[in-house]
Image (cartoon, rainbow, N blue to C red):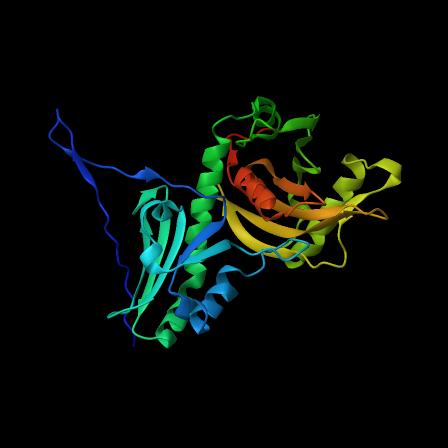
Length: 327
């Protein structure tokens, strides 16, 4: 049985504090666009089976988008080139043949914030096996790092959201670039304009019996379509609905300690050439006898949508519930 263990790469720079006599670790600030991954692997491995499994797993299509866009935008470099500024990348995957078999997730090694994964094995076959067995956990760590970074950028300038807390009993950290389209007692709609299109967040609630465990997908689609027809008017008699030809993805997760369904799919305006991805969080709020619905959707016909969707997910994940019942 192969031994797999976590290993820590150590690159520590110390400087003396004149007054305290203590040592302080000095790390540069990490760089890179959201969901960019630096691959550190020699060309021979990259062009063979090891590179194939990396591309298969780390460049797999992102869930819930109308066109294929990879989980990560990847750039490959040889290990000898991974020095200086190249080590500032926020995400890196270092893969090599060596004298031991190991896989490690290493935080803030060369820069901050940073997440690096190191995979080493005796043979190419060993690397393929390690990557096949552990890619999901590595991807999860990378995505969690990127969510935190996206939220950090959002926190620089936030939109005041007191009315959402008062009316719906939930807080969210919303970038100041968003504006209220609709704001009342039972429905909130916020939008950020893009060069072509927009990103949107909507918040509303439905009774607990609206979504049943044995028919969750069908119930969520029906709920979305009913809400879209009633509260989201479209010009020329169109209707905002779930795209029928594209089966949504459904996941069970938690948000702020509450069970939720996460649905990813495609929305469209019936009989019009308008469509895009959506991410729907249906959060069970038993204290208030409701499902709180948090949804983000993108309309950007001439742009790639992966990172737009990712920003919406980072906003939805920032939601926190008030303890007391709101109604």
